[in-house]
Image (cartoon, rainbow, N blue to C red; front, side, top):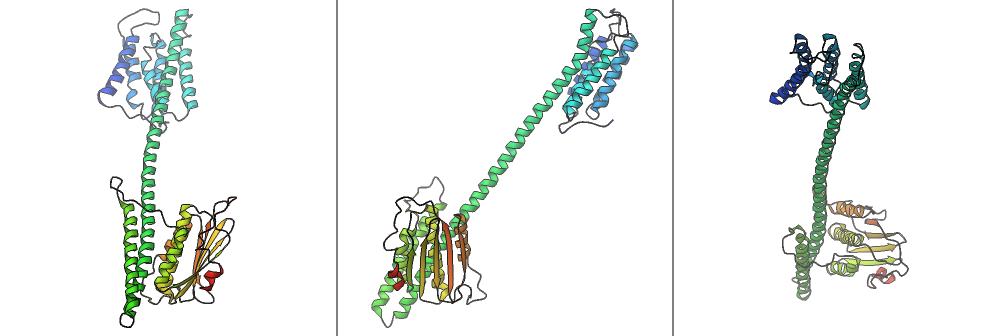
Length: 415
């Protein structure tokens, strides 16, 4: 008969432990065999040895075929009264061991209690065939029928306990794996965020420095005064680049390192300074704003600033034009930031063998990270347009106006 066990079969007993279990059951069976069916005592007979050997001999296979072992031990117990032996808990010790193993391996509860109830009924039914029962006999028969059920209850309890511990261990292992995965994900996100910051910083500052150096080289022989002014702007630009690069690289410091004072993250309040740096590099930037400006969450504020910075940097590097337009449209639930130029744009690169940059990728990732959308492409009338829509928090009763220098309106369009 095959094993009816579930997902937690007991490991086969080996060595001294298995020997102790079988030896103890054999000793109890033999001890119970000294009592005759008429309550008299005698030395173990051949019948007693037969019951002990037949019932305990199948115990080593109870792990592979627990139901077969249980049925065999119960059948031998039922034969005990026919062999002039008293049916008692001692003589059915092997039944208790087999009942424990079967209860431990059975798949469902109804299998356990159905089979054990039939076994207990079979043991009880074998006794009334021999004379009248006294209250002592009834107590003995009741305990004989009850003990297999108790052994089954113990086996089932141990199984449930081991299943619970296995589930707890599995959950702990799964939680540990998910913690490691979450840690790796956060590290990857942090690395990507730092990479975006470094790209925006280096691309912006180096582009401005290159433009200012080109102006200085062009005017070196003809206009020394303007050359000096361009060189002064170049010094200021590179100094600012070093400061921002130092602050960004500071994000990579370990927690135990001494941290230098960090300035607030840039936002639209610093937009006039940003535009002025591009104007000093020779890019004519006009600004137009529609609607009422409001306080932005830090993440959205930084995203809007970085997108304008990167878009104007791309205009300086790729557009082939000296002007660009920035437009800020404030609506009830979103801020639309647009940067347009009339040059060639990134849609028509001048060097086919040049690998594509990460400017548009970084801008799109920034917009998506705060719940916004970004589109970029050539304009039908010529040039390139970068437009992003960023979500806004609900408007307050007293909205804050943007910096007057930002709200250029008609003045910005006239530049």
